[in-house]
Image 1 (cartoon, rainbow, N blue to C red):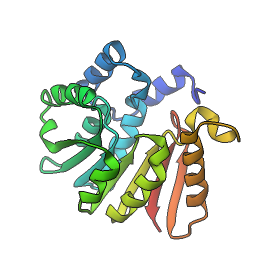
Image 2: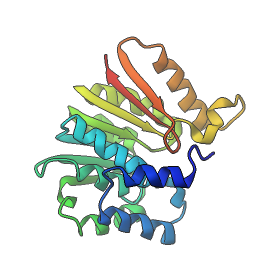
Image 3: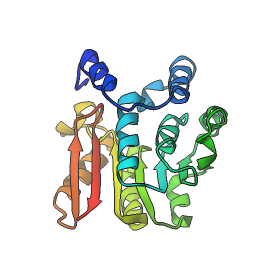
Image 4: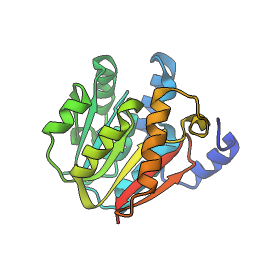
Length: 211
């Protein structure tokens, strides 16, 4: 399900601060050479993430789900030069691609990639993080979120990508990942200790902050 026509998205991008040419290089390489390139967040979400990182004056960012490194670099570009971004992934092959492209950017030195099951790595990390992006295996979104909330700074933001799942969240009979995301969204909607908004951008971006 495409929520906005290409011409509308392109118009929006033309009026936005977009990720760098280094990010565009990652995007183009991934589209041409890597399996499942649809996992890329792309320039629209990249612009939104960069804006959010900037808006909270983030110094530390945590990303769960790195793929080929586009989103990590898009966020790192909005961190101060002494900022830190820790990104977690389980795929060494795509991690290698990410590292090669980060090395071309002056912002790449801000990024630390840990290749291991994120559910285990999260137990070892110490907060606080000012911005946290969750964009990994959907079945574990509830567990990722609960740990992310523990690591979040008081004014920080958690962003959960793919929260609309191409419209599949509207259906009763769907895959386990979509069921997990829908159950988490419904649970969060009832919590008064959190402020949240689900944006119909690309495949849905759910933003959560302490009330």
